[in-house]
Length: 104
Image 1: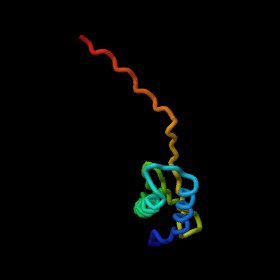
Image 2: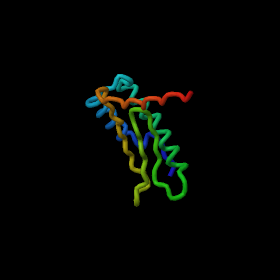
Image 3: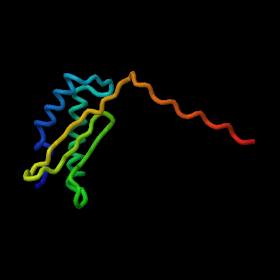
Image 4: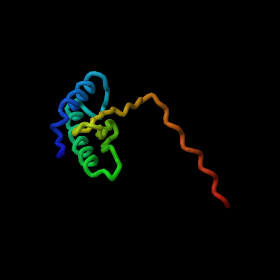
């Protein structure tokens, strides 16, 4: 089956609606999210169609979104999962270990 991005318009529309309603992101507006999702979907389709023997997934991601196309038994169309990679600005980043003093 030759996959096309327009086969997943319902999934993209639901993700954009969810993004607009629930996600606060300073990097992407909802319109930017739509463009990003469409681009990632093309990459996920390419990864899915060129996956190796025995592999069941095609994955594409950026810092905010992950799209996974998964082979579904008994269905010609893969399942499409769209996940938002959530981040909190309040989460403290771990401090790097203190450098050891140089030997003299």
